[in-house]
Structure formats: structure tokens, C-alpha cells
Length: 156
Length: 164
Image (cartoon, each protein chain N blue to C red):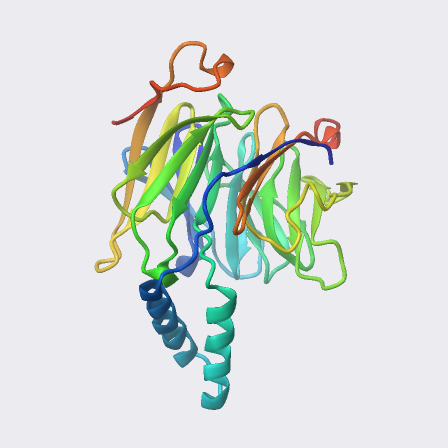
């Protein structure tokens, strides 16, 4: 395994807020209530989880466009912390940041293929899943530039 | 959800099947069902696409299964103790294992599960919560390790391009 490049995603520590920790506690209690766990053990498990998960992990997934090598990184606050809108960062095949777009809803999945971005989201009440696609317009010569300020993501 | 040649394949875990949609969201077809027979699933977790196949990892059955783009079952690859699986180029897959004391990750042939090369600790996110990995058309592999300081590890394992 030859590592060609390691790119650190520069972002501050994603420490959960007090409100998010309350949501996380409720999430854990609901989850443990469905499991055959003794009541006296639950409190310890919740406290251990709160301690180890105080640092949020918001990066949810990666996709690579097989046609052009464009990399997409999907970030979103996890459901256990209350969820929230998604954001997508686009990087060149060598890891150079190109653009960022905010998706005004939580996603359950996304992928890139043939210059197209497709997202999957689910209505939390009805459970209805929705697939949306968008074209990614890249300027000529985008591979050779370090920063491309004119990348556009347009809904189909 | 993964895209392959303009079709979005969505893993419907509770229904033990994979549904295919066009990019407008129109349902095209679905395949797979619960069971332990060829092409059947017990605990499907990882959906992935390679050059012209759709794959799904099933940790309970300890195998990855492959279907063509129309959903016809092609073959399965036994991978005992697998936890997660991702494509790595067109002919190899990256496997994460449950086994304590064993290397957490291995790069194996997509045909035979033969180990293709060691995964260095630098090249694979040991002990980290991984978020994804996918090979591109050139056979390179990218691993994203999701942790407090996320990093994008871009690797080009030479063994991938020589895999049978």
C-alpha cells in the first residue's frame, strides 16, 4: 500500500454542545430501552457513551466520480446529536479543494457519477425517500488549477 | 446509494433488496431477497459498485455478492469475519474484519478473496471510524478516515492494477 497523499481536512474540533449532548443522552436512552440491558447497567453505559462521544464526528461519507475523479465529501451532524442540513465539499482527484455547497436537508446517502451529483434524503415523519440530482459544472482546465471559484452545482 | 452508468442503486436493508432508480427518481427494478441462497441476503450493509457490477456485503453470511447492472446475480465471494467492504479499483476490494488481533483491513482480489498486499497502518485507518473508500477508473484508492481530525488518504496500491 503506497500512500500517495494525505490531506488533512482543516476544521476545528467538533465538540458537541450541551444541547446536543442532551439529545445524545435521549438517543441513547431510547436505544437502550429496546435492548435487554439491566437498569443499573444502563446509566453506566450512557455515561461511558457520553464521555467517548463528546467529540462529534460529522464526516459521513465520500464519493468519487469514476469518470473524472472528482471527490465529494459529505458532512452532516449525526442523528444522535439532532441531525441537521448536509454540506458537500468537492475536491480534485489530488485532494485540492474546489467548491462547497450546502444541501438544505439531511441526507441518507449521496454519490457522484458522470459529472452528476445525486442525493438521497428521507422524510423523518412519513419515511418517504426522495432522490434528487444536480449537474456539476466545472470550468475548462479545472484539473490544473488549485482553486476553482466558478464551480457550479445546478439542480436538474 | 451508489450510481453506476446513470442508475442509482439503493440498498433497502429492511427489505433485503436493492432498488434501482433513474436520476429523476423513477423506480426501474429491484433485486435480492432474504435468505441464504445465491444472491440472497441476511444482513446487507455495504452497497458498492465496480466497473460494471453492483456488489453488496453481508457480514452475517460472511460474503460479498455481485450482480450485473440489470440485477441478475453473478457470484458471491466468501469473506469470513468481514465487517465492511468497499471497492478498490475495478478488480479488488478493501475488507474490514471483526477479528480481534488480526489486521483490521486487507486488500483482496475481487475474484478470489486472495490477499493482494499488506495494508500499512498509515494507509488504512486502524481504530478509526471510517467513512468511505472507493476506487476510481485509474485504479487508485481513496480512504477517508472520519475522526476528530478527518483526513483524506489518497493511495495508489500497485497491486490493484495487476490483480487478476
